[in-house]
Picture 1 (cartoon, rainbow, N blue to C red):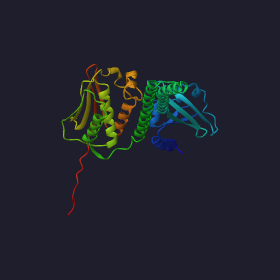
Picture 2: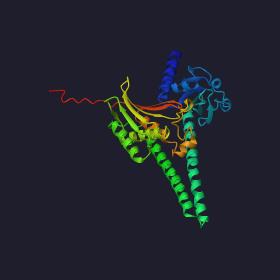
Picture 3: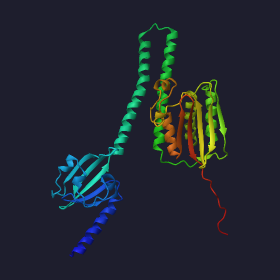
Picture 4: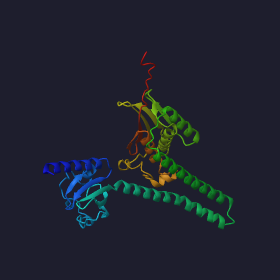
Length: 358
């Protein structure tokens, strides 16, 4: 076989390997026994570096486990797996798997573990937070139950006081469990786009009516201001109701007792529907604005628990809006005004054609 034919065949084979590698989610490299890279797919180049062909893999990865390997081993069952941390600002971790293809070539596959590790951390933190949130009311309940059982002569006034506290703690646990289940359901359905057309006024009016009947309002009230007639969005009625119940309830609980909560509906310059919930109160310091939609994150933990917050309300709002392809914008001036704006894409108008052909 001539050199030209050999090189042409080699190039074609390399291209085939590269084409196959480019449909994979993992990094994919083939080297010779000296570690010279013959083939590298796009993911490998994103993870390890650009223009990898003809470079030495041993000079690109400084992991001690990797440097100790000998690609001249002829056994096709040669197999090695280790974890390598990239020296970048993301501190990404790669699972590296090496397998001999034949006596002259080795296959190296890089799997990015960063997302998996981050999800594991989120899960661990979530379990720890749930355990902590449940432990507090359970400890209070256990303490009062023990007191009531041990003190047979407890007076009626004290007993009623204890029972009321126990009732409040039981409700707190129930609310927490309800919010955990709601968050889990919404997260599991984030990929399902809502298709029902909903007038934004319907869930908002329902929330206002429910809150007005609940006794949550004291000397203040909820004022609805509508500045547009374009009110239809594609959404899930119950989930949209939950979004505005959480936002309006927060506006009341964290606002000044004598100031109204404003619900304003407008259509912005980009033809998006914007619903803002505005209150006056202590506000939120700027450094906390990016974190308050995280699970169990509270600016003032003591105050949040005192007013019955679970620490999951805004996390539920965030994930419902992700599902609806909507955006949450938070603005706050401490000791003045806080504004939560939900930005929805308007429902697409459907044009029906009676007949295209005669």
